[in-house]
Image: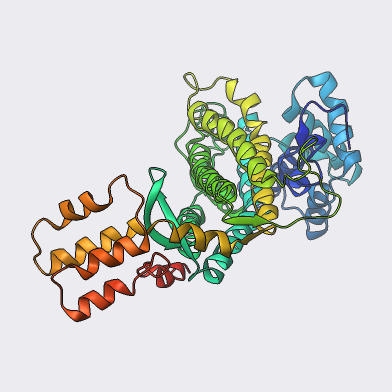
Length: 452
């Protein structure tokens, strides 16, 4: 652990977000750049109209692909050493590959590395691959795990009644399960959209016109070649661009994760409030301390940490979504330093997901407290009573119940006495007399298990 790091992601939280380093680190970025350059070179070699570059043998292709498949710390150190001279990271990758090609007997073809490309052809594809793989392999599994943990409690607590609070005031009861299901369902909808997300890439030269490629080999259909290459590395081609791929798809991803994180902040805050109302208890763990001065405390720190980290992530994600689609004329460099921080936003996002999962493992329902709270609020049955009165065409039903209950402490006996005095059939009276806040949960149980 690096205790001198400026970011807690690289020190205090390094272990928790370690999976992201394989996709969003400087090491990963360089590896993806090498991948793009190597696969592009191999693709060029398969183009029969480029007579100066014969198709590489299977053995040569294997050796070339090993440069990114076996990319290691020594590889990046070599690139960074070259970059000290070039002061250009993509050019450093090109020179690194040239040296490697000479060692595997392909030195006479080094001029076809980065042929007719601009650095943004390599960078945009590298970042698209980074986002695709990082989200699919490191972010989404944790996020899906959190959604499953939420839904498992929705099913488990589907029938456990809970006093609802609208505007902070007592309201028609629900169940813990149904309220957890709301968040599981909201996340599912975002997951469906995330699965449809395209990861775009461009490969069309310095101003997006294929000018260099076309002047060298006008007989090649470069639009087709570019599109086929981008599809081969499992990205979606974007052929109409300036020097840069305009990053609209990255903005879409950032907006989507911002929504996901906002849903989870809402969840964290609700759980925090249930804990503060003593409706959810937190399991104790030997040795843990809740307060440096108040020994009795068990603070909901996991949900607080989740909320805080998701808020940090969203601050960055919002900036990315607003800034990255904007580039002056055909290209400016202001996106470069911003893109390097994509991993920071996803690092704080992952921390939020991990913290929420940890918090969920500690909570359990305080059934005594939930029951006591419900039984202290018989006024919530006023909705049920006035609805039955509407059904039988009782005059001014809402106003009658308003007069009885608004701003007052109503007991079970008060409700019983009122019901007995109503001109209702025996069946309707018995229905209302048997009703308690704990039983007045509608279809909450069925709703709680609707989530796929």
